[in-house]
Length: 436
Image: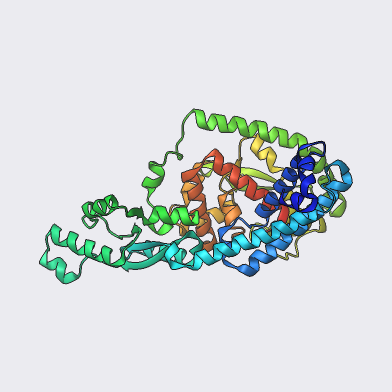
């Protein structure tokens, strides 16, 4: 609207609210800018650390918005803003976004604006959390110190009173003056100063569990500190009669609708594969699903038929020589996954869940990664929290981190999280990020 006022002056009111429907056109353009900003990760807090990255992505956003607007105005001229308003609006948008993010960077660098955080304990979980907070200054939590142990070995043998321990801890905490205290004790039984922490909490200091804070910051379950009780008492990790039935009904209806809508596209893809190379159009492979049961997964064939035999044993590479010409395009756009709608229809898979893998790979992960079997607790998915955050997995360490994301999803599964994963999946598919 500022661009309209700058361009038309007193005539802006008539343009915005009378017969030109200017307000509606500006709303559509604004929504387009917001969507492009999301797809180019300008709402990703990690991007805000780099001024150069912000400028590059902002140029990409404005270029995409301008190109799409030209196309829309050509196809439907009544939507055109006209009279230079759109170009002026883009300039205003660029300047405001740059200034706003520059202000964020300036504020983020000032230590006084960050919450002072004290780590209580010297467990590996505490060390991992300290590294994550140091890498994510945009979170506004600055670690000011760490109390490795609450008392020395000599003090333990002297068996000081509870009052002495309380006074010593209070003195140490007041020295650092924290806004947050993160409890990262390796062994809490008999060592956790509950009364003292409650007193500090009553004085306005926030108390956090290191594992829960790590989970909130990273979107992963900390496997080094993982406890099965987290799944046992998680309100979202449960098996009832209503929830699975409702989810299954929703998946059935949605997958059927998707099959109907995408059937012309799938027919064209099938024809292209048939004409491009010899071999079957559909590639079938055994995968491990819910409760460890095996099922047949369907995909469009993307590799040469004489090389398919070894594709299960050798991981896919970025520039894999086994791909066909059509297969490389399908992989990049994730269109080879469309036949998995059939797997959803028959109940082998869901839209969102841990990604299923071949039996020998799953067995290897079970042998080398603790708690790996727990990712089989729910139906596997076409996409998942690990896929949109981690990408392709090859090594045991890759799969270990993938498990951390999968357990996070299992512990926190909800409709809102499913929608977020689907939106991220659409972004990955459109931009071709991480495809092989």
